[in-house]
Length: 258
Image 1 (cartoon, rainbow, N blue to C red):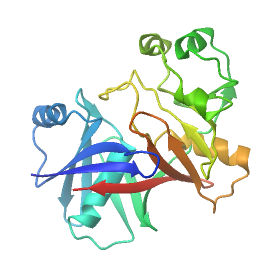
Image 2: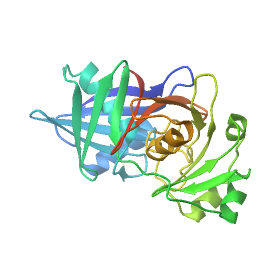
Image 3: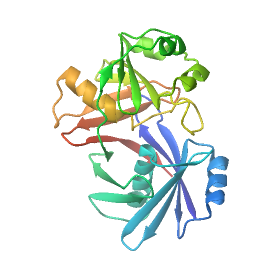
């Protein structure tokens, strides 16, 4: 087994989200993979297996196996292209629980294709407002996450949510967001106290772009050929790029690994 340490969504706005990718000849036992992930103590450890011309992938948080991990898929693609000698325009990763994930490389950016999760409705939840700390101007629900729309980036930076209260409310993730500036289309953070990752705040999250990109593309008038550039304002921080297509959202970023 060969291990690679990879940071995804790196750039001027932060160091991104770390992932360890383990290239294996066969999958270890589940309890061994869980033990390795716990020892690595990053949000996810990816186990990458080549079978013929196909690549299979599984991800483990320090607590349990997870069905899908966007930054972990991009990290694995970086290993395939940069360390395993593959020369392709794109690679498809076969997962156990989430179908096939396609990752492409374009102009220094790795992009993963995600199914859109657009906003479904505007809601109000008094308990959520109390848990998040600072009232947003809008609360919007998607299939998985809650968008909390604020007026400024400083509102996002200064949030100090009560994670125990957020955990009891029951949504998958909470995504405070605001319009950006200085060549940044929008900013956001991602709180996920119910998910089995190493921290209740994801350092640099890509999957929430399945909701963020359609929302901000509509607000900013960005077409499918235009890239949305966003900054995640977590402690680590990160630069994330997205294109809102008709049937998919392309989410990408720069990668540094060794």
